[in-house]
Amino acid sequence: MLQSCTSVVRYARHNLNHNLLRSYSSSSSAPTRPVKQSLPQPVAVVTSTLPDHETAPWSDSSAQNQKILHGATLSSFTSIALDPHPLVAFSLRVPSRMALALNAHAAKPQMQMSSHMVVNILSAAQPHIARLFSNPDLHPFPFEESEVQWTQSADGLPILKGALGALSCTVVGRSLPLSDMRWLYSSMEQGEAEVQQVEGGSGLASELFIARVLCVEDVQEPEDQLENVKLRTLPLLYHKRSYTTVGKIPNP
Image (tube, rainbow, N blue to C red; front, side, top):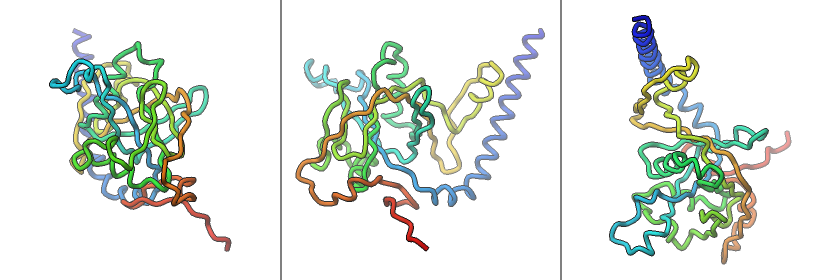
């Protein structure tokens, strides 16, 4: 009886926290949006492979053994730790094939020591690359585009030529839903909560991925692209809904 009452109280507490968070989110997202848009974010493209079940059923056996490459543009990439483990984080809108792919990799314990993805940090000369990987409806096969030059890592993942840097990473676990924060309260209370994805005020939902950096890959220079040499040494940034880069502050 006591255990039953405790479960009821815990369930009610989770629902109360959930409703409060939804109410706070919908009321606070509008005024915070201009502030967030004023903060420039580094742009990266995460590359990975799709799960085996997404291979084309009409392809022959040799084609089915080949991994299907996939990529997605990130404007929320950040480094969150260097010691004792180098960790990075980013969010993806859901549903998306990249989110499904990374969660499928995270569900395989035997793959935790190999890289699940490569985070390609784009240079200021690559806004076209960011656009190609940001719209799968318009560009369903970006790796086949002539503008996209790439090599493969030791794990067979694409490394984009001309990027500022490339990090081979492994996800540390399943993604965390950013529109339903009951997982946070359940971990604090050492309880279980049924977490579900809830759309925000904009009608969009996102999930947070945390990954450990396994190695820094060698990035090759793109072929037959000698223009914009200076831009290739600067980071690509996303600021106020457009791509830009850094610049020196003039002396007063």
